[in-house]
Image (tube, rainbow, N blue to C red; front, side, top):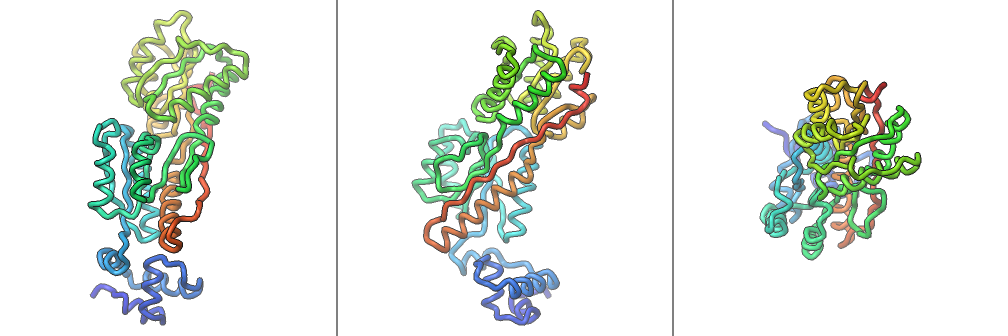
Length: 341
């Protein structure tokens, strides 16, 4: 027979109400008692009935992750981090891909939250950067956490997780300059993402710091895709003089650039150094392997989920949430074969 809340209470030597408080993360249980109940839950392999919890507590223990991002590796890492935190905190996860450019995106998200009775939302770019989406959620008092590119805390009482793309892009460009490159092309991702803007600004700032003029002809617009890299490489080989290095806005673009460079007879890194961003599997599966900025997507997702759950609990206790500090991540430079002269 599967374990019940009663058998857990008996095993731990506490009341059923105490077990219920632990399961519902009410935060009113003494540490020693909490440890005994958690040990009992683990020993008996007890699985709380989510539907019963929702009905009893008039609260749903389901979070939603909504996204519009073509990068499968990013989405997989995000889902892993969110699920890890949900499982450790007693929450379920609803995953909802969508089209951020849709005219109906606001109604789609609001209706989803209502119909699924979600406790809160995790928003990644570009949805986390869309004022019309945020305003609609605020009007309905829906709790959410935003994952954002930047280093400045947004003016909001709701939590956010910030990634300093600017600083990491500066470090990548500085590395290329230190390798002897001064004619460095930049291949952008979708301009709807603030990360693209931050990475481009970091690139420009590093050039200016070394008194290297910013040449707008070396800045190529694109999307976060392998195809962008391939097409950009075709443009780069036709430039005169040809750039000796490329900073691609993510690893998928960088991998496409590497493929395109080889198709056009360029040796990497001898004739063209290439760096990406994010440290996705693309950066490790190419030959040569790609220099990149390691973005800990799984940890970012866990941190965002933890902040959201903290916000939900705070709102439940006080009637409105306490201000929760923003959390910050800076992707770290990883030097690999693609930029070594």
